[in-house]
Every structure is written in C-alpha cells, then in structure tokens.
Image 1: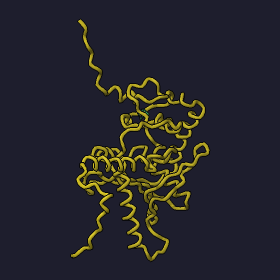
Image 2 (image 1 turned 180 degrees about the horizontal axis):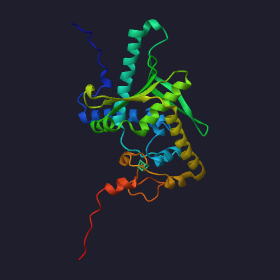
Image 3 (image 1 turned 90 degrees about the horizontal axis):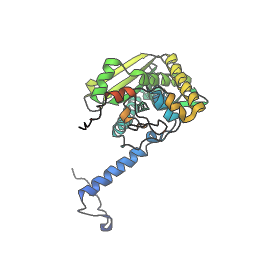
Image 4 (image 1 turned 120 degrees about the vertical axis):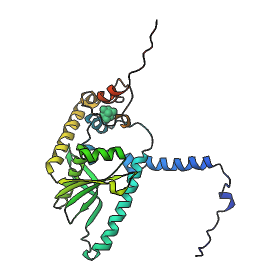
Length: 276
Ligand code: SF4
C-alpha cells in the first residue's frame, strides 16, 4: 500500500535532536493540565456519587467549599473517564446497529443528565452512565484495581455506590421512565474482562430518599455552625490518605482533617528515643 507523504513542518518550527527529557516533561505537563482542568476535577457542587459517601466530615468539607489539597493529578480517575468515553461509543454504535429502525426509540441512553432531588433548595443532578429502556435498568460503570474488585465481589458496592445508583434511578423516574433495577458494572482497570463483576438489585426510591435526608442533615448543620460543624461530624475510615481534605497530624479540622481515628491507630507509633 502506498500512503501519501505527510508534509514536514517548516524548519523554524522544529527543534530536531531536542532532549527526550524535555519532551517527556512537556507531555506530562499537558496531561496534568488536562486532568486538572477536567470538569470532574473542577466540580464544586455535591453530586449523586458523593451523597452516600461513608464519611460525613468529608461531605461537610465539600458543602463548606473547603479548598482541596493540590495533590497529584488523578490518573486512575482519568483512565476511568477514558473507558467511560469508549463505552459511550460502544453503546451508541449498538443503538445504530440494532435499533436504528426504532428512530428515536433507542435502547441505550448514555451520559444523560438526571435530576435526583433537592437538598435545601439545591438540585442534586448528575450524569447517569447508562439507562436501558428495554429492561428499565440504571447501569453505572466503575473501573477499579484488583483489591477493590475483590472487595466489591465479596461485599457488594457499599452505601456510596448503592445510593448513587438509586439516586440515578430516581432521576430517571423523574424523566418519565419505569425504573425496575439499578446496577453497577465493576470493570477491571488492569485485568481481563472476564473478571468483571455486575451487581444489581431492584430499584428502591427509599434508598435515594435516605441518602438525600442524610445529606440534608449535614447541610443544615453546616449552614448553622459553619466550619465549626467539622469537629462535630462523624468520620469514617474511607481511604483517608487520599482524601482531598486530609492533613497529617492536623490539630485543627477547620484547616484539614487528620484522618479517621481508626486509621490513625493503625499507623506505626513513632520511635521513642531513650535518654540514659
Ligand atoms: S481524612 Fe478521612 S476522616 Fe477526614 S474527612 Fe477525609 S475521609 Fe473523612
């Protein structure tokens, strides 16, 4: 096969022989800036994925608009976002391939905005990964590493993902759909597809309402007490070292959280120096 030649850039725009390390730094900087400026990284309003978070204090920080630690660019989340974009294409292609004759009556609705409810006058809206109009099922994609995948297979999705799925269910109900089931497809980030785990249960609006009610309680307390609420709110062992509000050894939670006491107990005690 003879492919057409590609024009060379003008000489004044090139730096042949530049150091590979410079290009590496430029590429990583580009990726980092793209991650930092992604809408998910800039999201300031609480969304369905956070309503059922195990740690009330973390929710409190978010509601108070507390600044997040700069931290590393979240590469794992970016890999997950890229997989979501690919899956979106897969579902759209299937709509065209198998359901084209149904005109606008496609089977899969992808990345649609849903309104899940309201807390103190603020709408809780989110983007639902997938809704299957044939079976009336909400599906959320989650990509995870091997340890997490094993945990979800053994213990199910946990309250955070379960609440999120039912909130989406409520959102679809608001958009006129009959919602029968909610599900989460856990996909291995670095494994084979056969290791995927699918969790599902019948849709129950009460799960969504319980999540909204819990959030409202925290929001009301935050409104009345301001940052002082942070000391009052329960904590949870929820990957504290990766929490955007974590501050090791903090003695002032209005500045940063030292982590859940249970987590701190598991850290090795500092070495003692004996003075004779
Ligand atoms: S560091 Fe841990 S306990 Fe503190 S807010 Fe974050 S998740 Fe909660």
